[in-house]
Each structure stands twice: as structure tokens, then as C-alpha cells.
Length: 276
Image (cartoon, rainbow, N blue to C red):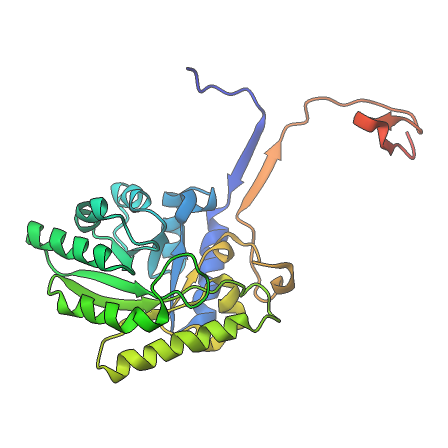
């Protein structure tokens, strides 16, 4: 089947805008690091090109949703740290190790599968991050279980607990106190880890919205998704930092009609021209 297209519509991606946007966030959050999220093919902008631009702009790491997305970056020669934001299925453990990805974990089965794969391959200990569900209710372990999961990682010599993270559900609603409740829940988890002498590694919680609204939650690293592409995460947050949209969608004009005043247009004839 031919892939030729004759539709005169295209998207243009300004990688300079990506570099500039990431650079702005890197300055704002310092000394915290920036991790640029390039899942879903870089939000449709092209993961490889955007990832390289983000790293040039000051990102210290990239994040993806799937092992396959990490593989695409590695195959293109990207050697920066790549965080996999959802725990890989056990069958993907070998690929995670071969590709040098850093997965989040939040189940015993996931932890054990990764440890077994490391042992089988006689590989170096694998960095993992424990993900805590403080209220997003998408992925992650319950706060009450987090210390036990962290201890389980530490007990496995094949693994290294390199980070602890969570994710905010409504940080794009600045007046919603749910985000602060999530933050307090996460900090309670961190306190328990420290009381049990468990490492926390890189601590991270902020998406773009929380990065803009909750400086106290920036911790060691922030995960910048939509902001890297120059879009505010909500109208209420527009203008907090000077972002430049990276994508523009363009089309050639295909047909022009000259109409008199009073002409009504298209289905329903709902628009009437006020002038010729």
C-alpha cells in the first residue's frame, strides 16, 4: 500500500524552541535537575529529535512511558539516562537491562523480575525508582507500602534504589488543595524511608504544572512534559514562564471563492458574510 500523500498540510517543529523552553525550566528549578518527557513520540513532535534538543537545552535525563520508546532513543544513539515511567512487564526485564533504562517499580513481581534478569545476565546492579501513588490512582504503590517496597529493592543486590517519586493529579488547578495533600503524603513516605535508614536517591514529584506552582515540591528533579513543547498546562498558568510553542501546523490554501455580502456558508448556512 502506497504511503504517498497529496494532502498539502504539514507540521513544522522548532527544535530551537524546545531547547529554549527546557533551558528556561533548567534555570528556574536549579539546583534541581530537569527530566524531559518524550513519551508518545515526544507528544507527537518526534521523540528522538526532541530528546536531543531537550538534552542540548539542559535536561539531564529523558522519560518515556514504554520500554519500546526507550529502545527507539537508544537505537538513535541517545546515551542519556532514560526513565521508564510505568513499571515494565516482567517479560521486558531483559530489554530494560540491555538498553540501560531506569524503570520505576511498584510491585513485588516487577522488582523480582528485574533482579532475576540482572542475575541471569551477570550485569551490573540496575538503578530503579520506587513510584508511590499519593492520589493519582493510576500506577504506584500505596504510601503505607512504599517503605517495604524500598526495603525489598535494597535487599536485592542486583538492584540499586536510585530514586523515589510520585505524580500529581490536579497540579494544573492552582486553587485545588489536593496537590498539597499529595505532597504531604509523599513527604510522610520520605520521612519513613529515612527513619528506616533506606536511601531515597533522586526524589521527584513535579510535572510541568507543579513545577510552576509548587517550588517546595521540586526536590531533586522535575519532569517537564508539555512545558518542553511550549504549552502552558492550563490557561491559568500561561505566562508564568516565557514559553515558545514548538509546533506549528500549516496548510496550503486549496480554493478561494469570492462571495458578496449576505452570502451564507456551508452546512446549516449558519455564517453570513457581513461584506463582500
